Length: 212
Image 1 (cartoon, rainbow, N blue to C red):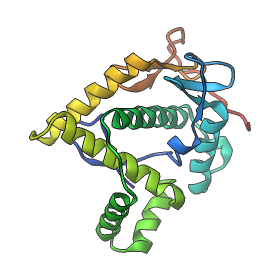
Image 2: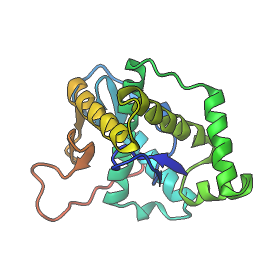
Image 3: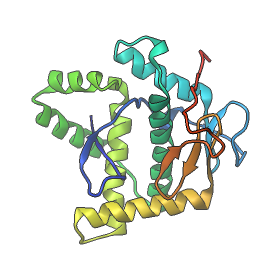
């Protein structure tokens, strides 16, 4: 599935890995720090461990892999994308960017044409572990990021747009507070990534989400 990667040096389409419905499955919480059962807290939004587990298991299922194939890398990349999606949505809201269903439909048609038809497009989606029902949510984020680049760095090259969006998301992350449960690592707002826990050993520790 084509996806705008705000961490790249320029706006380019990149495959999304391990992501299903993101913003739609994130619950609200009045707590500003991770609590029991929370994988991360972004501002007033809480990503529960159960939701993270559901996303990981959904990806494995679509790939035809057993639940036991879950890895630290997959869990981290999934959580990382969920956090970034919240930040993109919040920044778009602040910039009064509203994505219409018509815009989503138009971009979906472009992706279908690029893929060579509906069947080829849906096959690519499934191969990447993305449920068909989740496509609109991902396209919406694509559009938000693209429009944020136009607002934050108008009349510039794609590199400058990407850098402007990245910087704005990083600053927003620090402003509203973004924390990850030590069980999953630590949040690095400067790089918009989930990194190893500050007190972790040099060898990565296994993270078992269980069957919540």
